[in-house]
Image (cartoon, rainbow, N blue to C red; front, side, top):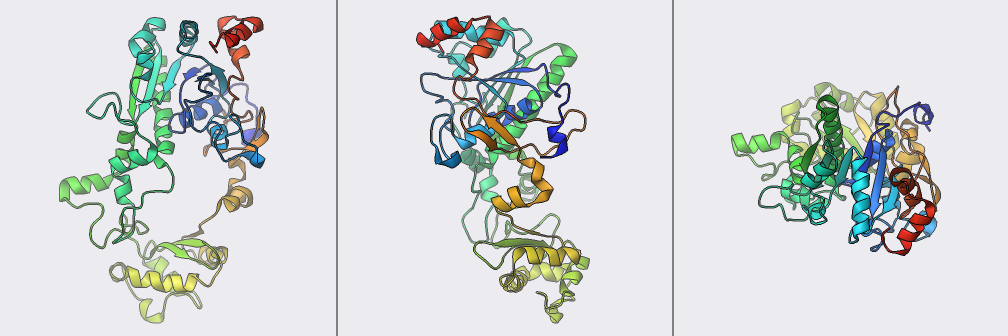
Length: 418
């Protein structure tokens, strides 16, 4: 691991911040994992009756060494590293009393339930302010708490479709392709982490808490960028006959620009010619993909013949290994990168060797997880503890915050409160 990660600063950037956390899946849990990595105490609350049922990723594959179980879900462990885990049965009056005490000692309450869940439990924002006047409440649901879609429930692919992102991704004359994973679960989590931090800064400056109402669909809309303005001003849709090919660059216009098949099973390489100079360098390669009669093409001519250029390049790449192409083109000064598979990226690429640290999980032992793609020289992030098993920290948290003895915690467990 990178020396920065292994360093042990006296305090993390967020040491002293406590999060009362109801987030799940990735759109929410992915936000608070950032806070935990930088030193915040994130107390993850789950339902003991439904066995962690608030988060469908708990206990589902992938598994380490094929060992299944409620506490062995690989994605759950990845999204909840460094957090503390407690259980509260919110159908009981005693659990609601305990939650009040935790909120009173927290800086933020975070959740990504459908709109209104905490309100139905009796913990809407007004009630939370009665408990702690400067509390920060951050919600992240698909459509936010206002508007005609308030009651709708979403997942990442739905958010992507409603926002127009799915429509924008695809090949000419083919249906919209979207992505092979929930892109907006990742990005929604990033927006939520930013929102939490900004609310903390505001409270530090003013002493005031607030409710931050985040709509994941609106977050997705911002990623359309100038494509929405292009439609608004020019009535030009982001997909139209013959264009755009989502592998090609329209802003700035470049050609060739795409992903090309290489030798082997499902092997690919990305190549981009930013300008005429890149094109001349590509054309100058001995036994390269550019024939002499094409070498003098300018940008306009290349843009008009992108299909033909792509066919020529792929005939050349298809008989070569992707890393050989990457080395050859980079040495010539042409932007190029092999499309890497997980093992290549995680285990074999030394440029990112520090990005997947090893954490220790209560049942699984040592497991690698996603790190954070930032480096702080004074307050580096740290990940060393895996995600909590269900209720793993009940005694610790209820003892420290509520003053309960182990015997009292055991009694609450027996009574079905925790």
